[in-house]
Image (spheres, rainbow, N blue to C red):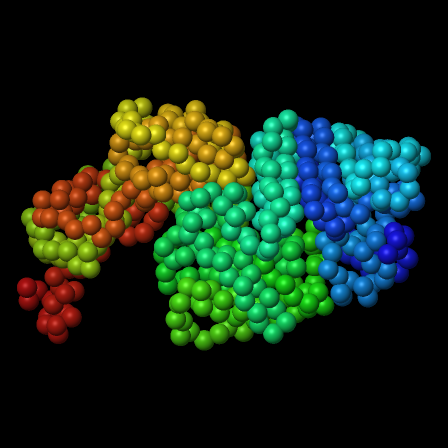
Length: 580
């Protein structure tokens, strides 16, 4: 279908908003255009995080000179001809706004050749001014190259509010990874400031695991399980974590519908339902590619098509749940859930704010306020009433003590976390962290979309006891760590991925909050769960717990100790208080 301007009725019915928010939006729209044009090779070049230059080249179908001129008109598209065509839409784009919107806020140059005639054509224009358009012949190279220069040069207010270059680079790499994961049959190349970041070759077949290994790293990808399932007219494919290879963050969770990256609370909630009895505090890595009749979804509910609505949310939920249960052999006896409104799922997920995630921020401040109010100046906790003797260990995790008039039940993991946390914070504040040089430096693979946050914190991490260096585009080397922590390579990797996820803008948060974030994360990972303790070790632990500022809670706010008085205990046996 040739490009044409949509009629007024059709155009008025298409929900269109502002589609260009940042260089990331530009790259997304241009790469989607390349894929829609049938490209098997796509190259993206970026300078100064896209503020100076974005260039996307492909070997797709190309355009004629007439179509090239129409391409920057608003609502000019080759994807649909009327509102009814949206019901069967299989392409990424359809509104015909992307190139027009980019043209309005930049200096644009488009070169294209469709294989017909002796030459291609180049269009140059800027600032949304149609009088600035100049079209000239160009070399007959099949495909299209779009160059976008000086983004937002004519809207300084919008340029002013762009994120930092480092932040934008991370987002661009993440977007590029999302395209590369779902399209293994396409060759993708990413160059940033003259440096090649990625260069993916064409993969035969629809296997996601090889690209996943290149993007997520070998440590994460080795624990992935591939799947390919059918439910009536629904096809699900992708990968999920095995139950023994969960990680500490939600960084690597991808949902695609008809090859479009989307946010779907329905899918995410189904995944977490499947893992709820095995994941503890960790998170699955997953990629769900959903192929469904376009008439069964609505992709036009968000200006940038980030969100999607399914015609039958309950069916999607149960299909995802059954797929995971089958691959993991999880037997779930709970009833299936009928989902009426996917908007009710928002309480399941953290909301992000600049600097640190909201949930982390709330936990941190509420705990500090509690400690200041309840424990400031306290010499010893109320539960500590000697003589105290160690009775034993239950379930390999609960320590049992007898005090003068009560029984104390101590969560040894939570108590050890509290002790290590306060010891580390004290050493940090006194600038006396005991650092342990690693006999062999540890290489930690971190996806390129996350590594910039860690590198940005390199100097501060040195003061926190972690000596690191970047080692290539997607890994760091750790040379030392605080002696108080004993972290394996896998735990180090989880720690640094977690930090890159939680500390979104390192320069915007205080050293104290960074300190407490790393301390809580590292303590949690370094304490051995279900470790058998002898009497001497158990007594040493409770004495150390007694001397902490908040002996009743671990750094994450969970209880460390439960006290049952002798009166409470004898009443359980139907005897009167004071009988013991």
